[in-house]
Length: 100
Figure: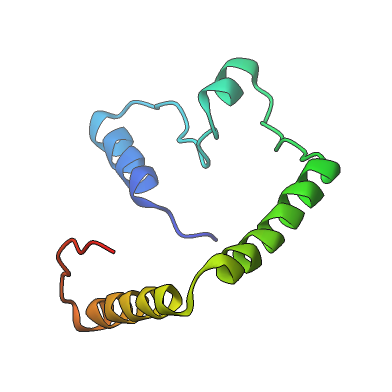
């Protein structure tokens, strides 16, 4: 037998205390207001495969192009700031707003 959760236990206690039979407790809650009103579960939207491929292609090109256009000094500054931020998270230290 499955374990009862808090609401099921509370429901049975109220029934015993009042001597009334209450509506049964729902095991699962509906996912959304739309599901409640229509009674049908929501289906996830399907993504357009062509749009996904095009977005991924642009994303793959973007970082390489940005890195190619940055000077070595600027790349060094970005790397230093990233390392400081990572170590601050490890140590739990808040960094102030620093300009680039």
